Amino acid sequence: MTTRAEGELLTRVGPGTPMGKMLREYWIPAALSSELTANGPPIRLMLLGEQLIAFRDGKGRVGVLDHRCPHRCASLFFGKNESEGLRCAYHGWKFDVAGNCLDMPNVPKHQGFPNRITAKAYPAVERYGLIWTYMGERKEMPPLPMFEAVMIEDERERNQFMVQRECNYLQALEGDIDTSHLGFLHMGGVEAEDAEPGNLGVYALSNRAPEYHVADTDWGTMYSAYRPGAPGEIYWRFAHFMFPFWTIPPDGHFRDHVIARAWVPMDDNHTMFVHVAWKKNAPGLRRMKDGSPIVGMAPVLPSMYVPNDSSWFGRWRLTASKDNDYLMNRDLQMRNVSYTGIEGVHVQDQAITESMGSIVDHGLENLAISDLMISRTRRRMLRALQAHGEGIVPPGVDNPETYQGARGGDFASSASLDWLRAYSDEMRASSNPTGALRIAAE
Ligand code: FES
Ligand SMILES: [Fe+2]
Image (cartoon, rainbow, N blue to C red):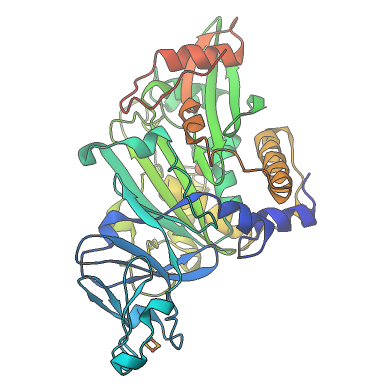
């Protein structure tokens, strides 16, 4: 179980909090590259409870600054993006992407002191379609993480999008490592015999109460949910938690399932979900035996969004929200065509995790064996927090190659194999489109 005090430690992310300090050790995916155009308008960026401004200067460089101008704290959001920097709309002071003050035009030249002024700036880099920022204290930046899904160079092979969620990052993230809800929330309306024959995912419907292996790893934690498959075989579903807020879910065929999902805290009550995947990913079970799509299992589509606006929480929101009960259709639910009557796997997860309240009251939970991965992950995070308080660098910061040992998805193997042996055998047989996958040591 998790106490309320532990829940506080895990969920509070603002400056000065233990988790806030640990998260600031890591590079954070802050925006899609496509959100910023050269000399275009700056965007408001809420990250770890801090109000920031992101912009791209005329040379294509990206800046992430505290939104308050270091002169008299006017918001730089209203600034003018000029070729070498952002000019504050109040008195015209101008700052480059590193926060250097380039101009102080409201002060006589001989009385100016631009060299002594810097806007608070966080280093920002761009790689393969994502803008990353580092909000930590090191002068020398740690290396960028190396999940295989963030190493996809070819733009045509990348599937990247964001969705905002109105709840704490931890409960949002835990949805990805809470595997037994698949057979209820998402597929409770589908009988195994009605689903696509031959798809391994059918075993997750014929047995909706899997057993688990769970382990700590160098990059976080991993589990396999397992149940019997064909005679003599086990059907495995492997997934991972990767420090500090990443997951690899099991819902796809292991050998081609190149994916990583970040649950980035905007503040304690809002999360930006960042989906990064290979376009050739093979998704899990999605069809009925007659070939029609399983009701309610649509992916996130561009048509599901409301337009972004420039407010602090104005990016990547869905039309289906808590204000309209996620467009739930009670009739579909009553007839058990869909367990929830809510359309879209992501929207179903969103509805459920937001329904827990902004931050789950951990004192009210009653965890079961099906929550083994969740409790193991919380313990792993709490231990890392404690160690971090004692000066120990958290997992993955200085050794980002450790993430290359993580792959998730489903497959079947001989029932005689140990779970970790089955994992490394399957890794060996997997596609490796980025060259980043590393076979786990046996
Ligand atoms: S407040 Fe920004 S230039 Fe004065
Ligand atoms: Fe889910």
